[in-house]
Length: 312
Image (tube, rainbow, N blue to C red; front, side):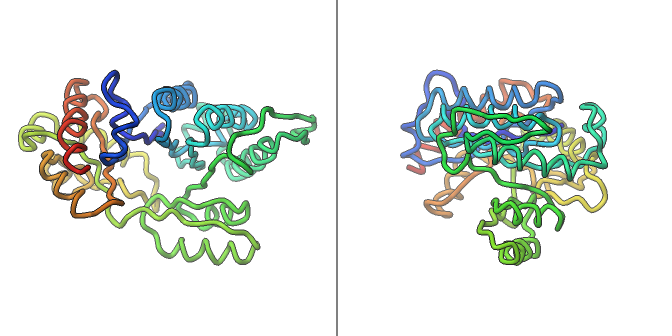
């Protein structure tokens, strides 16, 4: 199972980075967690640690496979993080596309759409703080979240069914890639259902960035970690599945040329962020699955110590 917890990178370095760095610029770090049973616990714990050390930084869970979890537990956990952070927790809920994950959780793959509908409907009702009927029982979730009318919840997916679901619930839609046709369809469906929302369209090109003084050495010594991660993710993609980080490379050399994974020097990244202006973002990927931990820390420290100060 692949779940991404996006947080601002500088706040993950224990002891010497804090909210004040926000004034010098920001970029987004991308953490990949491979897990099944403890997945939600790990992600919410990580978000809680970020919120405990910061006052303004947002954390986004993308994507939460809601059908695999108890809807009431989801509502409670998200409400707690929303309260603890003062409204800084954002969740994107999806269905997923791996039947094996449903089997591992004892869930019916064929019922995934209905399970998603139930989960979203339950969370939205739970966040009102009022009693409601759930599977034949009256339940109530308190206290109410900080964010009203409910915590920020977006729906993901690459199918028209997913788009219609987002429009029907009046929730924002996050495509897995730059898909203008689905964006247009979303707004059509919002109009048809009498709802309002927005489409958080990803850029045309997404690059997961690793910062290093010597990119050639990183590709030579660590490129196989990038390739193993990208190949594993690609193996999960069913026919027709679209993702902005879906690689088709068959070698480290092809992966590098593809551009989904990139290794840049601090100076190169500074130039790019300055050129992009105040709204510039960077999808940092400092620790790839299997990579030596110190290599990840080195990348993150270079970003914090050499990139952020230069773009302030």
